[in-house]
Amino acid sequence: MQVSLRRLFMTCTSLILLSSALAQQTTLNGTIVGADGKPKPFTRVQLQGQALYAAVSDVNGRFVIPNFTPGTYVANVRQNDNVQKLTLDIKGSTTTLSVNW
Image 1 (cartoon, rainbow, N blue to C red):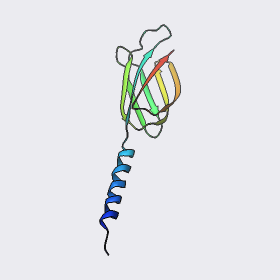
Image 2: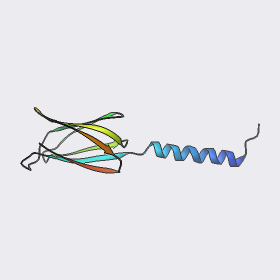
Image 3: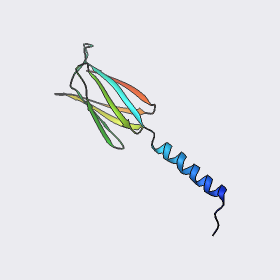
Image 4: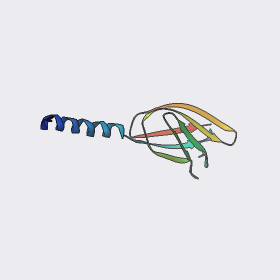
């Protein structure tokens, strides 16, 4: 059984392109602010979709969820009894989310 060099090259190239497409990751950067415009510190942000990702905002209401696959997610934002659900279609390399309650 003889494999041509061209066929081997095409197979390797296809595998490299496929693996880089599957490995595409993005980051969600956001700030959580209240209805009064002040930041909401220590608020939990959870993304539910292909997998589960979560973060807690800092003292300035900012959060970062790194290294997840772009797609459609339900964002659950919670601080004490305040809860908000948003549907997000995240496609870019960085997405910013601001939530007001």
